[in-house]
Image 1 (cartoon, each protein chain N blue to C red):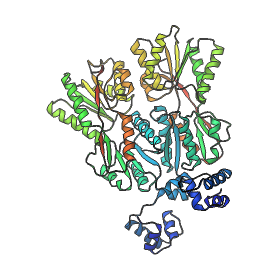
Image 2: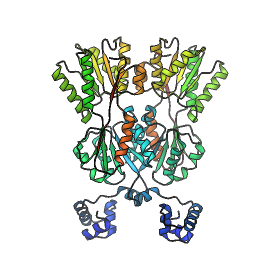
Image 3: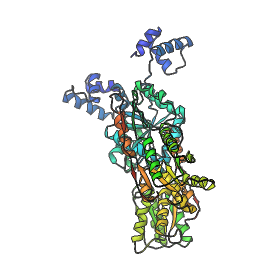
Image 4: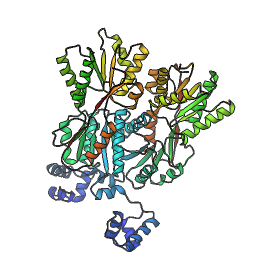
Length: 318
Length: 318
C-alpha cells in the first residue's frame, strides 16, 4: 500500500503538504490540495484515522463503564451518552465489568495508556479513592454524589432525599411496615438510600425489610415468593427500578395479593412500563443524565458536580 | 512529560532498546530491561497503548453497530460480544445508529480508516451490498442469513423456518385468524418472517394481521387497544419479542381479554420474562449468538456462516 512518502512523490509535493491535506490544515494552496487528493484517490489511499488522532493527541473515544449492558437502566444511560458523543464526533468504548475489579482496572488503564480521552463510570465496585488517583490521566465522571471532590466530576440525583421523600409519603398514607428492594447493597447510591431508610426507622420504629440483588422484571416473582413465606410481611415497598416494580406488581396479581391494599409499591425511574402498569414512581431523567455525563467528560475544566431533579408521579399502586 | 528519547538517554541505552522493552520484545538483556523500567517508573512514563497497537497494526477494538442500546434484545447480544471480547483482550466500540444511514456509514468508515479491526452489525438499514464492499478493509459479521455470501460472515437463526413452524403449530391447535407483531417491517430478518406468513396465508387463506413498529413492553397496550378497535380480530399472535408479548399479555389481563381463549400468544427469544409470565416462546440463544459474533469477527479466515438452532417452549398462552 502507498504510504505518505509515496503520495508526496507522486503528487510532486512535500510530505508536510500531504500531511496538511490529510489533517485539513488551512495553509495549503487549492492546487496542491487537489493534486494530493487526486493521487490519494487513484491509489485508493486510506487515511489511518487512529494515527491522525494520535498525532493530534486525541483518540476521540470515551470509555463507558457499566456492570451490565443488558439492564435497561444502563441502556438508557448508554443511549444518552452515545447520542451526545455522536453529535460531537466522539465514539463510545463500552467496558462491561459485571462488577469485576479486574475489568474496572482495565478501564482505568485504558485512560492511563491514552486509548481513551475520558472515562464515564456508571457504577463501580472499586473504591472511589482509587478511581480518583487516575484523574491526572484524563477526565473521569461518576454517576453518584461526589460533590466537593476535586478530582472527578459527578452527575447524580440525591438518593437520600428521594428515599426520604418516598418513605415519608408512605408514612403519611398510613403504611407502617415499609421495606425496600434494591439491585446491590454496596456502592455509594445504595449507601445513601440505606442511610435514609435507617434514619426513617429511627424516627418511626418498625421491622426492617431489605430485599437485595434484584435487577430484572422476572425477579419480581422471587421477591413476592419471599414475602409470601414471611410470617411478618411488609405493607409497602420502595423498589429502586420500575422494571422490578412492574414484575412485583405482576407477581402480586398472579398470587392474588391486592395492590395497594395488601402491598403498596413505589417504583423509581418513571420508565414507560410504569405508566402502562399504573405504577406510582419517582421520575429520574436517565437519558438526560447520559447526555450530561458526556458533556462533563468532554469538558476540560476543573471537576464539577451536577445534581438532577427528581419528582414523584402518583398513580395507582399507593 | 519524558518521551522515549529521554528515557533512552537517562537509562543509558538506545531508543530501540526502550522500544523493545515497551513492546515486550525478547531480544533485550535482563539488565537493560531493568534499567529502562526503573527510569520509566521514576519519571512515571506512561506507554501510549494506542501508539503501540498502531505500530503493531491493530487497534484491539471491535465495532458493534446496534440501532438501540436500551433494547434488551441488543443488550443480550452486546453482553455476549463484550464477554468474549474481554476474554481475548479486545474492547468494544459501540455505535448506536437508530437506523440512521449516516451513523451506519460512520461505522463503515471507522473500519476503512483502521480505527477498528472488525465490525459486527447487529441490524442495519443500509443495503447489504454496500456493507459488503467494505469487507476488504476488515472482517464484517452480520446477524442475518447471508449464507453463500463471500464477503461478510453471518450468525443467524432461520426466521422463515421458525415463523413457519409457529404458524403451523397454531393452525394445528385450530387457530384460524393468526396475526403477527414485529419491530420494523424492513430488513432481512423481517423479510423472511413476512414471506413465511404470506406463504402460510396462501395455503390457509385468512385475513392478514400485521402490527409493526413495536419494540417495548409498554407497546403491548397500544397493540391491544388496536385489536379492541378492530371489527374483525385475530385469535392468535406471533410476537417477535418476548418483552412485547409480555406487555400484550398484561394489557389483555387489564382489558379482560382471556389468553389463550380469546387470543393466543407466542413470543420469541424465551427470555426470563417469558418463563415468569408463562408465555409460550421460541427460544433464541442471544447471548450465545453474541459470543459467536465475536468469534467470527476475530477470525481472519474466509467468510463463514453459522445457523443457530431454535426451539419451541410450550407454556400457557396457546
